[in-house]
Image 1 (cartoon, helix red, strand yellow):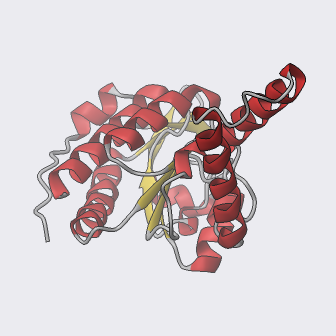
Image 2 (cartoon, rainbow, N blue to C red):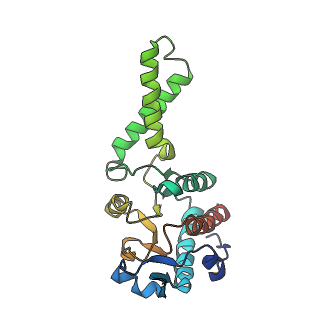
Image 3 (tube, rainbow, N blue to C red):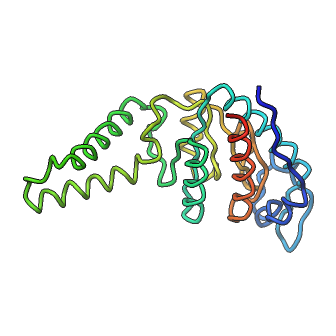
Length: 229
């Protein structure tokens, strides 16, 4: 197993705002053990706990990647999309940054067929296969390719179910959580103070709204993946 070289410290986490949870009116009872206090009506996450859980998640990622496992990155919040996509690409991992398509895990065969259809259309267009069609038909084909690209670009090379999924907002992508559980795909998940940490096999207690917080976590995951290949 590749040694995990990614260094963590709570000062960096605090600087990135990892410790800011949600308003005091929104606490999941199972997150109580991860809360350090309250400031300005907002729960503060105990960064010692975050460090411990993130380290556990990174060790799992390191082992998985060293054994050629795949992690699907899922981040569908508008403000996170570009960051998630770029990190996944750098790590040569698949990603979903648009809406989670129901059945991506539980009906994977059908999804694969749609991906193949998308790749076939793209290939035919590149070879000039549609050039003799009318302008109206070509516009229609271009629109279809764009629509399919939006849905499937991030998983175009995912030929089998991943070993794990990294979900940056478990509440928003609950369908993905449920499908992963059904198919035995391990879940690494960022859990804010309003989320049930039991939803993830590897929960990371952290602010799931601030880009700086997600960026910090993704940087550590990226460094671990690149060090483990």
